Length: 194
Image 1 (cartoon, one colour):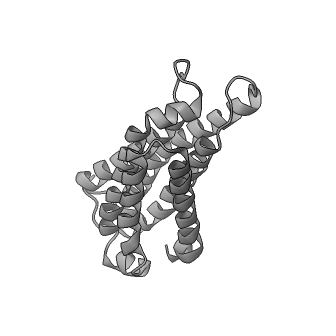
Image 2 (tube, rainbow, N blue to C red):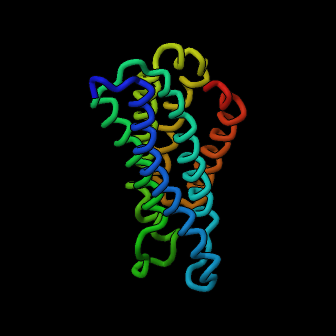
């Protein structure tokens, strides 16, 4: 790897990240397709589907944001391993939304509520990972995000803590709606800053 250029290394990293993120997206799309293929098998839950939409957005945004890694002049295995770990956590969020079997649960919403602590623990990890990811991309990238970025992590961690501790469906719906609204804000506000 010592003879590889940063561009060659970035291509390698992007391919591996794309495979992991692609599996997460495929998991979500296969889950959505199962509702179309077998409409009577499981009841559709608005709470579950909102988190499905939000997680799909998160996977797509991660893939978009990682293009900024092209600016990294010096790659090392620690950064590579970190980025793969970040992608794996995002995949696990998708896998928790569409588990292999929910026969012992009363549907996807029941599964989600009962496994919410796993989901929101992993989601909290993504907020912490995002800070490290932003630092890896360098000061120029950090400065391009502006002060609104400093709100993202505390807000995200607060939402995760609230949703982690509450079984209340209305609280859960409120959290996912705030999360989606914040994702939409970032898409409109800074998506072209890469």
